[in-house]
Length: 148
Image 1 (cartoon, rainbow, N blue to C red):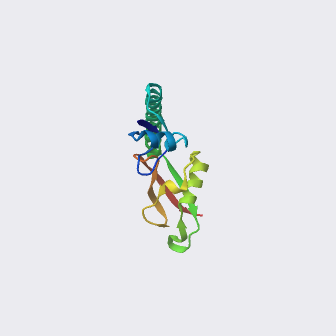
Image 2 (spheres, one colour):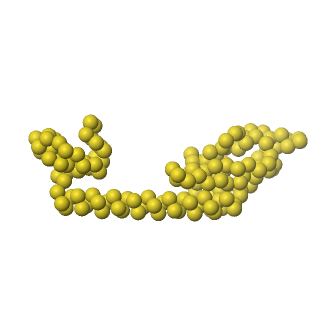
Image 3 (tube, rainbow, N blue to C red):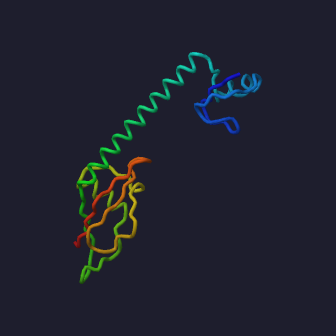
């Protein structure tokens, strides 16, 4: 019997896959526990429509991330930090501070976990910080570090 899996099933397959299993296993375990449905014409058509919808949504998210990445190239934020004589900085700039300043200055909600700082920012100047916007798209934001 062919079954469309509604959830991941160990040793069978992942959600959305069509698998061939024994009739008894399907009737007694997979179907009653709502782990899958029989692969008939209606269910196959529903699966096809769901995959098309998911692909469309994924494409829209990718395009939005690419647009945001292009916008970020032109923008920069300024972060102020306490500094001593000769520009020596006390502490460093964290991704949390960068996310907070991006929200204040640019109005962008950026998750601090998605900000990638290559090396610790421990001196004054301008730095390029990478932001993971999508699994395939990384944007770059210029961060200017100034003394208070």
